Image 1: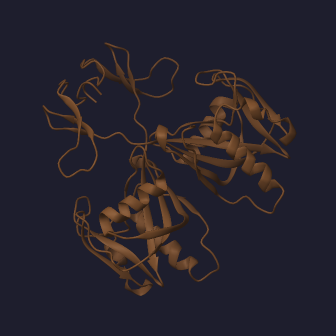
Image 2 (image 1 turned 60 degrees about the horizontal axis):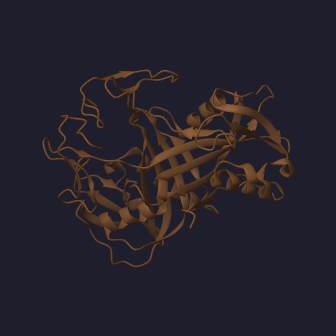
Image 3 (image 1 turned 180 degrees about the horizontal axis):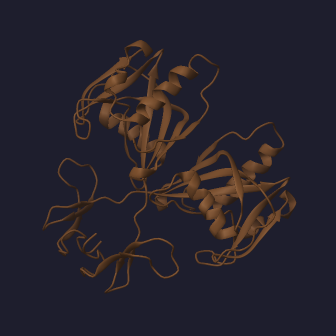
Amino acid sequence: MKFCSYCGSDAVTFSIPQGDDRPRHLCGNCGAIHYINPRVIVGVLPYLGDRVLLCKRAIEPRLGLWTLPAGFMENGETSEEGALRESWEEARANIRVNDLYTVYDIPHINQLYLIYRGELLDTDFGPGPESLEVALFGEDEIPWEEMAFPIMHRALEHYFEDRKGSGYPLHRGVIHRKL
Amino acid sequence: MKFCSYCGSDAVTFSIPQGDDRPRHLCGNCGAIHYINPRVIVGVLPYLGDRVLLCKRAIEPRLGLWTLPAGFMENGETSEEGALRESWEEARANIRVNDLYTVYDIPHINQLYLIYRGELLDTDFGPGPESLEVALFGEDEIPWEEMAFPIMHRALEHYFEDRKGSGYPLHRGVIHRKL
């Protein structure tokens, strides 16, 4: 942040406000404190029978790699609404949500991922503008080496493991920077 | 947003960028799109035996009313770390987290609440700078009519209901604007 979005001044510093314990973008002209907080990514793990739906990304980052439908949660929507919106935008998928399935923190990029588990209601899916291709994969068919994001890899591992058992409990975790 | 935080121009409009489906803060000078997304509030429902810990707020909004320790998740931390940080800041409470307990959306104020359930490790708690008072309450002692936020009311209701049963499943919900 170079300029204050309230007053337009360039007297913005990154320093610790009085009474705070960490640096913020502070305007030396009008005194505004500009807080920047983590963003939420919402998505769905859509399944039909023993297969799950994946999207091949048509946009950067990770163009050409596979992912579950997911994206930034928007103001004015619930996390579940956002997850369903992303499933429609990226995969034209009609889904009935079962439950919240994974909650993962990725602190080094200031992101919190909420992935719902949801049943595909039909096979009328197809690529939206951000996808090159959308398809169903059984466990043995998943392109494990071509997944766009570690979090999606993790969610799919949980899912295929849970399928062998009796339920789909919430999975929590943290993904740290690769060393 | 009145001024672009990248270039300082006042040519910022709230309009729909090309290829998007909702209005954003757009800079007519440098072309920047300023996204504003929901914020995450993280907190803990701290318990000791059959009592829970509440804080009486020393700050607005809802000064003088009671709440569970909670606050905005910060960049660079996990949601659980944030919840524990808030418990320390507001209640000087030492807590061992059991699990993620409630995930509530409050879409009309663009907030997502994650509340963990956690055991108090000792009784060395006390008010931090944002609290007037910190105390333990049994179910019959909770100041139900003096709770600061509906989400906290809801989390406590879930907790005392679950205590009668055999487990503490994740609770999800949406809090809508009061009509």
